[in-house]
Length: 321
Image 1 (tube, rainbow, N blue to C red):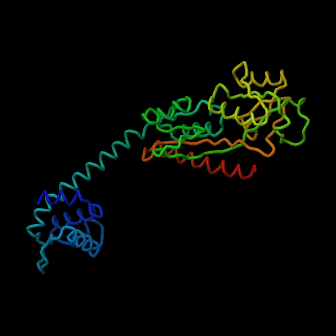
Image 2 (image 1 turned 90 degrees about the horizontal axis):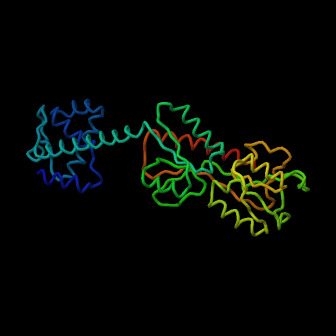
Image 3 (image 1 turned 90 degrees about the vertical axis):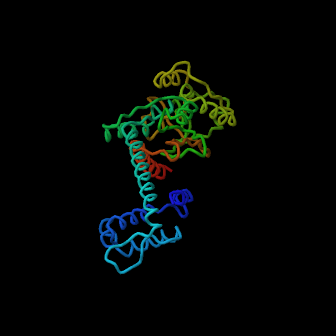
């Protein structure tokens, strides 16, 4: 009978009904449907239905149907009772082990963030709010390039990552937390337009500084392709650091791209005007990315926080446009 019971569990016909097995063992122990139902905090009709379905799956009766006060197991029922205990013990061990896995990961979390995100307000909001809200969780941030972060995510070195260009793999789950359009700072003395938009064709033959060339090589390549269609050359600044790039832009009167500094979050540098592009857009999207089916208390809380930021960012985007 043990073999038959094991085959029943292995087949998983409509799934092993753990509740029915618990009901069966409770009836066998209490020798009463009424007492077993009370023990399980369910109604007696519900317990009877569970038992009937279990017997239908097995193909035999587990209890004698009689008017005796005490419920008696059939010979098949006595044999199956042992298997039911084995199944329930295995189930309890599996649940306990799963909880231990969750508990072991709940106290720490590693976020891999694209270096390009250092000045992003969404990143700062996510990190600082998480640290403030959950001081008991050991939280650390690793800054690196996207390709390295994806490898670390696959290897389990990091639990979740923040980047601009998601790698569309089937085993990954992505949450877009914000989106904005590329803009440009221009020295005031070179600005002859009106309003805050610029026709990129008017910059044909010009050179434009890419503030983020040292942070994000894939974006640099994309920018070069995008602006080349307008006859604009994207160049990297000779010095690192945002303030140094601003000084260089002002000194040489060169426009400066603001890939990671959208105007609604930052003050415009002195003697410069901020513009968006007339008729074209280069949207920039930020994503939280994790492996599917990966769960922990620490990760779930960060994901929920990212969802909240995404909702607020979407509302800001609608208002801005």
